[in-house]
Length: 108
Image 1 (cartoon, rainbow, N blue to C red):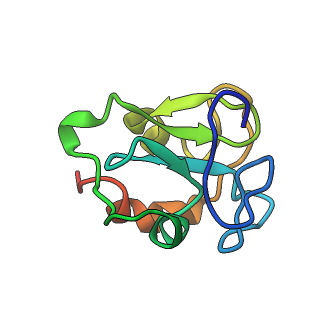
Image 2: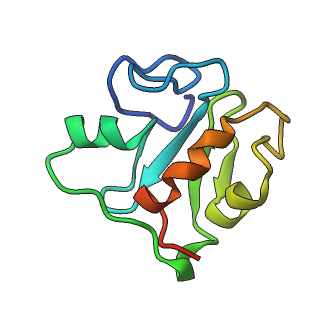
């Protein structure tokens, strides 16, 4: 993505990776531990030389989610409340990502 490099395995221009590559798998998460965008937790596990850290509840205003369609950075709270659609370009995100919130964000 322009201005926001996304690391990972076989990452395409809309942030899909080898692990998650459906039409709606178009977000990347900035990992707290390294301030680096990855398409998923598996890419971080394969590429980073350190364990992942989750964002704390008090950090919900941090911009840590990247729309792979338009490049808009969302705050964590904004992402969690967006109903699986980018507030900027209205592209659909995978609603199944909510099942993995605990890998990225401290529970509510």
